[in-house]
Length: 542
Image (cartoon, rainbow, N blue to C red; front, side, top):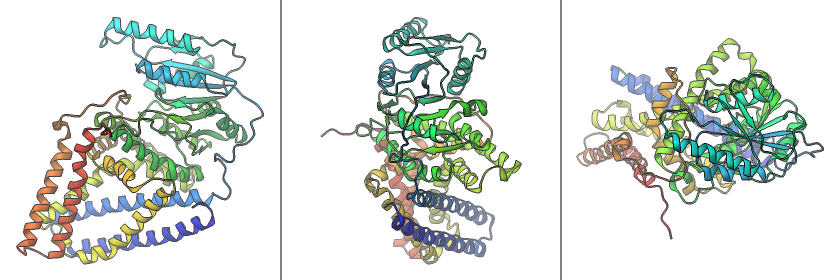
């Protein structure tokens, strides 16, 4: 699909999609202005317009990322096929910060670090476990600490500890200060490696505790960083190794695939890629220039990326799977992960808006566009709720009344749907993803709407939240009362569908309007019913 033919195809498709978006929103606005008279009509109609506008804006952003990724296909900068020759091996720090992670997971990760083929590497385990916490069993914590010491000694990994503060961002910042010779109160670095270190590391590679890199992970990234001295970091994909054995992990992995394919390629082509916190190499000089990782956000990687770009540094993405990790294995773990991501990302929207108002010229328009798209992504929970509730309101109260004219709706809406779905499925099929697989990721995101709503509301109110690791090593079904928003809305949609069928049977309203809104209710009921499917996440054997 790459090359001039693919670029021309998507350019034409993008033009057609943009036209369909404009025509649909124009038709919807005209219907709203012509029909909305009562206050409830105005409120519902305006919310629906905003929700649909949000959806189409982000769809257009996806199309643009595909286009930008293809537009540089003939002259790539950072790809697996354009790795420059590495003539020198500057020192690299391989870093993982962990808070009371399972020992077997840490052992696998640190062993993979040891097996990296890069010759001038220094491995550091940043033990962020709170051994002084009163909430844990003191004997168990002492045994855990001793096990960490023994593991680091056996694998020859340097061990860094300091009094707990600031979670992952604070730990890495203290570690960088310690390397630079700055005072870090009560910090202790115990060296277990078998060779002395002659100079301070030029690059820092950060992994999550469950991420296992392939042996050749480091060399191509260092080669690119050496060739392009203004690169602050290069991000690589995440891939979940428990992909096939668990429904939640599989669907979460497919969501990651959509992001790490065209979206990241498009962002990288515009020098607007942001750091994802793991499987990433960072230039130590750039980190020092921006004052280290941003400790004010629970998504310190995203927040720090903005600092890099504001300070004139560049970023890039290498679309090569070279590390494997563990995805969340149940809805509880997935919801926790998504809440943290949504809270931090939407929270940064305040900073993005503030920096933009201070000086729009400080970043190119393309970068502002990408940051605003990323910062607003998790508002999708509110959008889903509005989309699901509006057909219910029409079937039960005839609000908004302009739903009674669905012929205009379909005239302008169908071209948009056909173009969007076709481009999305075709583009992902070129990367060997099937519709059935992609549908699972879409369903999992949809049923997470109450988590996104809560997190985004707290973020907009300025609540920072606290960092928490995603649970690993097993899956547990949530009690049904924890899923009341999803199941309650599902029952409401089912009730709306039944009521719509009864109204159609008794000719109680415009037939086409009743069928259209009944169809939407049953569609949302089907989506929300998948909550039960994901709440029992273990795949059937056979």
